[in-house]
Every structure is written in C-alpha cells, then in structure tokens.
Length: 134
Ligand code: THU
Image (cartoon, rainbow, N blue to C red; front, side, top):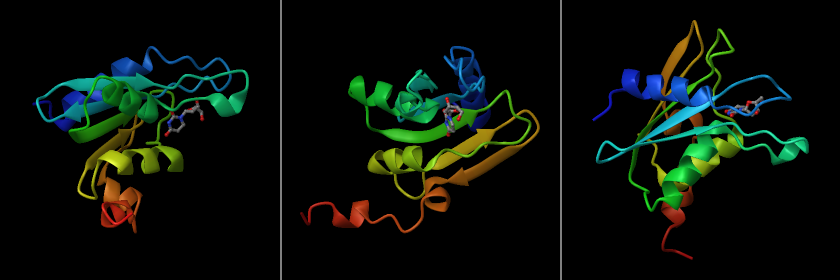
C-alpha cells in the first residue's frame, strides 16, 4: 500500500505528462485504490480554455473508466509552484461523488505541503445523505 509520500511522488511523475501550453502550469494527481493500485492523471488543456481537464478529474475518470471506485487517498503535485495548490471546486465535487469526508488529500508545491481531508476541502456535502432517498 502506497503511503502519502509515495503517492505524492507518483503525482509528481504524472505532472511531467501535463499538456499545458496555455498556462504553463503542470499538475499531477495520483489516486490510491484499496488494493494498492494507483491511477494517475494530469491537466490537459485546450485552446478553448473551458474544456481544460484538471489533473484530479483526469485521475478519477481514468480509475472509474477502469472499473474502480474504491478510492483510499489522493495526492496532487504542482511542481511549478512553491506553494501548495488546492484542488478546484469542480474537482472537490467530483471527488465527493466517490469519497467520503475522511478521504485523505495531500497537495504539495515545491516548498509547501498540506495534508487534509475531503471533508475539510468540501464541507456540508449532502450527497451521501441523499443517496437512496431519490
Ligand atoms: N489545474 C489542475 O489541474 N488542478 C487544480 O486543482 C487547479 C488547476 C490546472 C488547470 C489548468 O490547466 C492549470 O492548472 C492552470 O489553472
């Protein structure tokens, strides 16, 4: 089972595949599954800027496309930033579809690292309460 340091290293490697000709800002994400499998993702930009896909969602969509939903933790690396860059709101919501409030999220730049949980990043999420009620 990968620990958070290993997962962050996987995220750092994933950032090397970033397609970011518009922002020049590489992001890598690594998503750990319960059997130790790690799915990675990177940001993929587009000349129609709004079509850009973040690294976090790339990792989630890759894992779900492979039939996996048993997510244990995520790490995100922004090697072009000294400070840690937190996942955007869209990625927080997408993660919340598959992970609960205790889900560990680590994000790190070159000089700062934050270890937190999805519940801290995306509080008052009612999805899991609503499940089965509609
Ligand atoms: N980006 C991510 O991949 N994840 C985040 O959480 C924040 C932003 C990407 C989108 C875009 O390609 C670049 O970083 C600059 O915003």
